[in-house]
Length: 195
Ligand SMILES: C[S@@+](CC[C@H](N)C(=O)[O-])C[C@H]1O[C@@H](n2cnc3c(N)ncnc32)[C@H](O)[C@@H]1O
Image 1 (spheres, rainbow, N blue to C red):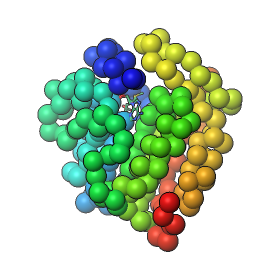
Image 2: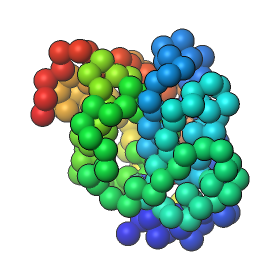
Image 3: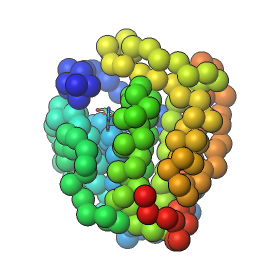
Image 4: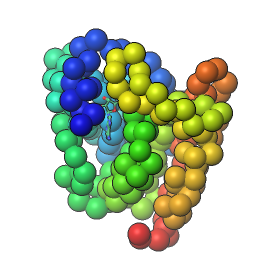
C-alpha cells in the first residue's frame, strides 16, 4: 500500500512542481469549489487559498501528509482520502487539480480508476488542472525515498484522458531533462457523455 510508504516520508519531503497559476486565475472564479487531489502536505491547497480561493479542499491517502499539512497550515481544509471511491457526490467540484500525483501511480489501471473518479466528482463544464512530470519514454523507478514512481510520456497522459471519453487536454511541455513538466488546464465540455 503506497500510502504507508508516503506516511513514512511525510516529514522528510518537500515538493516543488508548480501549477500554472496565471492561467488558473484567469479561468477559475474565486467562489469555485476546488479539489486538490493527492495534495500531500497541502502546499498547493495553501497556495490556492492565498490566491483568494476559500473553497479549496485538499485530499491525500497518506494520513501523515495530512497531519503535517494541518500542522503547517491550520487555516486550510485537508482530509485523508484513503481509497476510491471518493466520498463526494457526483458533480461536486468546479475544479479538480492534480499535481505530481499520476507520477506516483505506476499502474495504468490505478491511474485510470483515479481519473474516472475525478471525472465523476467534477461538474459538467468544470476544469481539470494537471501538472505532471513526464519523460520522453515511460520510466518506472523507485524514488530515493522508496516510493514507486513512473514518469509517463506526455502522449500517455493525454491518451489517458482521451480514452475516458470527452476529456481534452492542451499541453505546454517544458523541457526539464530528465523530466518534462506538463501543465494542462482545460474546461470540460458541457455535453460530455457519462461513462
Ligand atoms: C509528489 S507528492 C505531490 C503532493 C502535492 N500534490 C504537491 O504537489 O505538493 C504525491 C502525493 O500523491 C499521493 N498519492 C500517492 N498515490 C496516490 C493515489 N493513488 N491517489 C491519490 N494520491 C496519491 C501521495 O500520498 C503524495 O502525497
